[in-house]
Amino acid sequence: MTVDICYPADPGAGLPDVGGLDGYDGIAITGSSLNIYHGGIAISQQIDLMRAAFTRDVPIFGSCWGLQLLTVAAGGAVRRNPNGRELGFGRRIRTTAAGAQHPMFVGKPAVFEAMTVHLDEVETLPIDAQLLATNDHSEVQAAAFQAGRASCWGVQYHPEYPFREMAAIFRRLRPSLVAEGFFLDEDEEAAFIADLEHFEREPGNTALAWRHGIDGAVIAKDVRTREIANWIEQQVVPGRARRHRG
Image 1: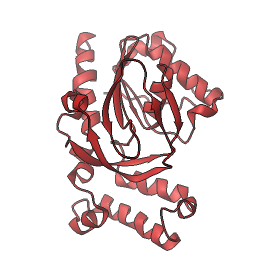
Image 2: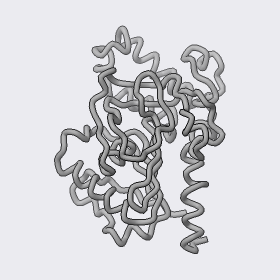
Image 3: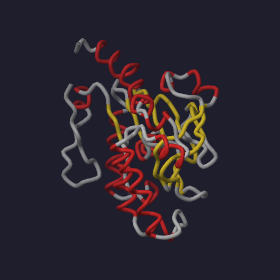
Image 4: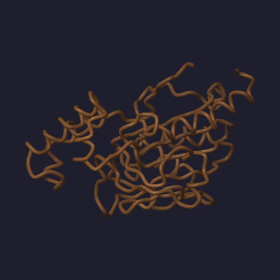
């Protein structure tokens, strides 16, 4: 398997042209610190890339910014979340009736926690999109829709993140998280970061799991990443076979 990584917001990113997208079996878009409603070239060229991808028979998966980008490119809308930032572990994410039947969530609990960090949310899904998961913080936690020839799956949380990535994000956001009320002071914030790093070294630590109210849906890598694994198995691999690439 060959994976190409690009940074489509950057000048001179060397993005593939429309025809070049046919060489890929799948496209995955992860997080960003951008706000899509601010506009500008860094955002418009990403929207243009997705709309080009919609003209090809290539499945797309988006997490966090990826879901927001796919939504806007397909005609939906994104806003700043009126509930504020969702951070650390998204709580009680639950599949909808459609989500319970969708292949994205095969092997996933009906209610689960997931690593997350986002200030914006999907306000309006594209026409004919399926809402697959929700929670009390953001109505759209997962969705699927067809955009042109492309099948799009997206989640607002981060199934791809290991604990060390979340720890790095918390360090990057310091000291604003104290000001936003997530921690009483910087010592409490530092302790939480230390717990995340401890989880990376020792994911089976039941005392830490109890303290933070999480279970195997976050701790066990095969469950945490199930949405991505399902996308590869149900979307990428069959498409590769249709193209006679093995």
